Length: 136
Image 1 (spheres, rainbow, N blue to C red):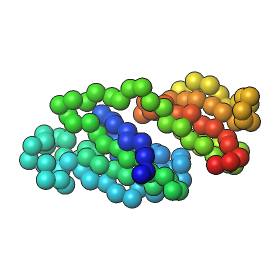
Image 2 (cartoon, one colour; image 1 turned 135 degrees about the vertical axis):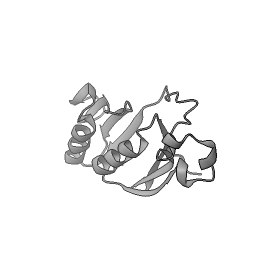
Image 3 (cartoon, helix red, strand yellow; image 1 turned 90 degrees about the vertical axis):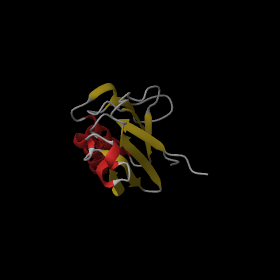
């Protein structure tokens, strides 16, 4: 079995995934708009360019996402994306990149379990915990 995070957006999925592609050093492996899908005739025309499914490969991990169905654009709640790195410079680079345009909740700092830990909400409203771990 493999588990991955699936993020829901209210129309900004493609912009968010392009941002994550740059910040995390990943590669968008797949994207499908509502207009490209067999569902196109049942979706409002202005939603045809929105994302039905997108996949970002980051190392051996993946993040998937979509723009929520237009009739129910309820944002996801009760989650935080957690990213763990074994390179301190990479922790700082990714934290600063994700924080750009967002809100830092807890600046990168030393904690009792690691030399680098921080929390933020990115400019798309997605919460993140960034952690250094020598054992990743």
